[in-house]
Length: 167
Image (cartoon, rainbow, N blue to C red; front, side, top):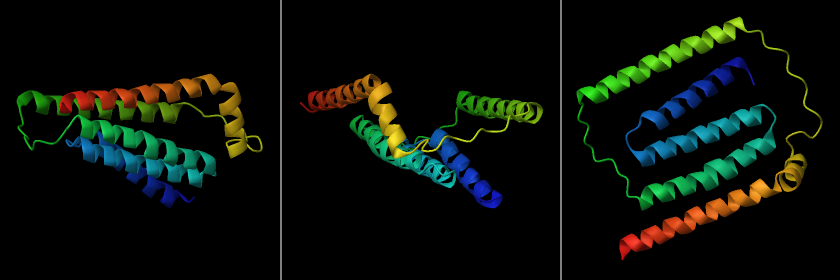
């Protein structure tokens, strides 16, 4: 991946991530998050981590975002169009931009001062389907199963709450 391609991809990623944070509509913000996750998967593809890119799209852009949108639609969150600019809201935005600028400046100074060691080459098969599956179903089997149970409980709870509200 050339530097120009990376710069365009990085700018699109940052713009999409900022849209997630600043957009007033929860649904449009969630769609911007899907775009961010897809662009991150493209970065993984360019880095040669095809398995991680596929998992990024399937797990995050697919399953988790469907769950987010399900909850947003279930809670009936909508943009009321009430864009009143109170003094506190403007002050909050100004403080957020100022804090973000200070953080960006500090990170830039850190990156310019600290020497980074050369990256070591990954072992053969690292990040591939077989290595991920072996790690997931041997070392991380219990957390994997607990996560699936937690997601199942969350979906069942959302359905119960929706039916209780409808009744």
